[in-house]
Image (cartoon, rainbow, N blue to C red; front, side):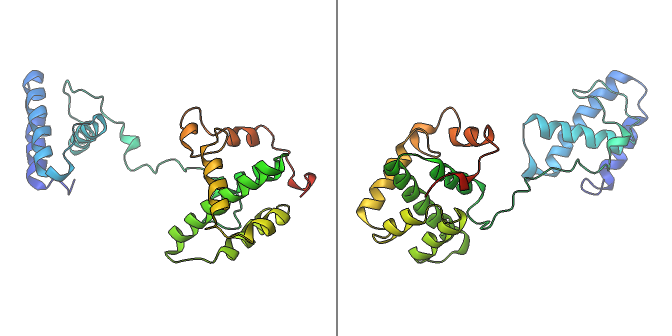
Length: 218
């Protein structure tokens, strides 16, 4: 392996010639310590790092090394094998910089029956979206852009509430206070009272996959 150099490879070849298994094991442990010194920046006492070093040693020995190591040797078939493909969510996001969770929050706002709670949640979503927008674009954004995005993402089902809140602006004291109320509510994500037990709003929508926002009035 190029990362260790030819000298280490020669030492590994020498260890293979040692007849006594106990002595061979002792030299293998010394070799692991030497391999750690070669890459001090990667030095780590974690189990994964230690296992990687032992795997590298077995690979350099062409899987011929017979020692009493802390980990079993990897199978030759696993070397160079491509990792399993990770299945990512294929949700179609209209605005990717807001993420899937914001879409779920908008669905939550649409489903909310109490008008006052609906307004509080929309105010929270708007301020959250503005933070995401600035982080993504590294620039300021007009409040009207955020309000318009909420209308589009909710298929205008939150249009009347957006029109009411947008008259005051995201920096208005009332909107800011509503957003703080939503942040502290246990059923909304990210808030301090929701650090335990997971995000209930996600669970609710996973359990109700037939939810259709058009069935809810504005």
